[in-house]
Image 1 (cartoon, rainbow, N blue to C red):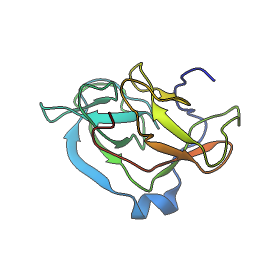
Image 2: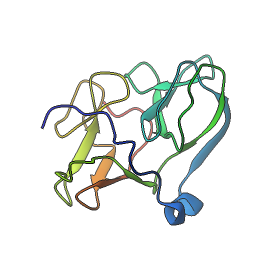
Image 3: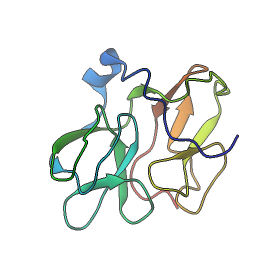
Length: 132
């Protein structure tokens, strides 16, 4: 499976959102779509994960422009990742090489696996921080 941008048809699991780690108080440095992996950079802003900052979680909603306040949902958050339903349950998934994408194989941005497939459509965040 090539790198993919998380699906936008479904959103976050609201039950796990209550218990997942959350990072609040930051603004976006660029537009970010719902469910895209985000990183926190030295300037205090959130960007699509690309290996230039620390992976902090996924976007619970779309932020259509820079400088919008957004909360990152981290460890424990279940979210819709694939409309196609081709995730392998129990397999790790990784931050992709392209900004805001996910991969089924280790990349230069993630050698540990930030996500775990919990259904054919959904991933759960299992790691945050520097993943290389």
